[in-house]
Image 1 (cartoon, helix red, strand yellow):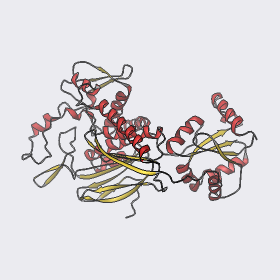
Image 2 (cartoon, helix red, strand yellow):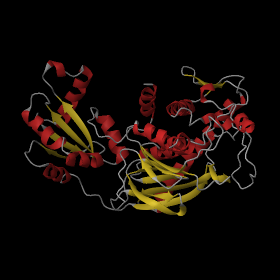
Image 3 (tube, helix red, strand yellow):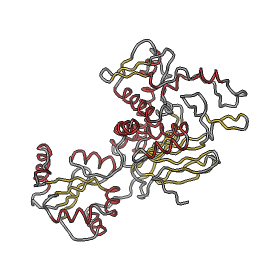
Image 4 (cartoon, helix red, strand yellow):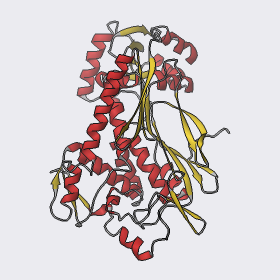
Length: 457
């Protein structure tokens, strides 16, 4: 029960999933349409008394063909006028529906469909037609202007947050693309300053400096990031822990390590690591680390968060498509100018110069963690650079984890956590999370996948 409660609270904090649902508010529909570069299907219906409305819902809206089309192309907005008392709408919703009725349905017809662009401009209207879902989709498409493929793809590689970032945007000219990429760089730099423990003037540094002494008041953004981090710690039983920064660096992965640490050294290295000693005050937005010498850091979640915020900013500026690649923490939106999905290559952990999969990604994030870059070997056993913050020992048994989610922040944290939790526990947790999936490769090269992943070859 505890895990289910955490899952519910955690997912509510992250980017909304791509699951299609009927909206009830025009302004919210416009926001979603703008974010996803989609059009709006506005339906006027009498759901509990209008026979054609009921037929339309059964024959068209509920069909797999229409659901797939709507998922990719439309925001669905229903303006309903039920008559039965048990289905009566709240007064506020009734007022909203009446205003939309007056503006978009002067004929007073139901069912009546209006196709709007993302700004709310009418593209076309249609009523009830006893036709197939395919014919209905063709009818809707006839209203939507074909987009000129003036967009091109522009890239820039640079170093931010101590790591390599690849920023890709769809734009018409290089000058336009440069403006957008500069915006993304500025946003990522802002995030770095917010969460940096190296910058002595940052709030994160202040929290660490005051550990065991006094609480520190924070901005809402940093407070919420810490709060979400603690929720992930609960979800993963401490496999993810931002207080890992308190850890003594006894493991060296630069080739200089010659002896295996003693049990005492390992135990002492994590003595001050425990997310439960991070105390938050919701009302005052203060953070307090209970033990002197404690520190927090965002190495396991910060780049993903930066990718999310850069994507959010560019969408708000009207960039129709792009990819933010934060050193492997990737977040995409829109499609390529040719109409195809963005394709992401997943590195083969047994040969890092090759990929083992090419995957289409639509409006989502994918993060891969692997042990093929940094590791040590003692007594013929390979030890990953990913340390279990609960024990101080490196994670073992897994060589690669790829997580798919709506948010790069969440995917980033979960990819590291699965390494620590192991294959069985990791898959069990992922299978409890809606709209999140993963692929795990264990140390023997076997592939394990969450329940919604389908691998053809």
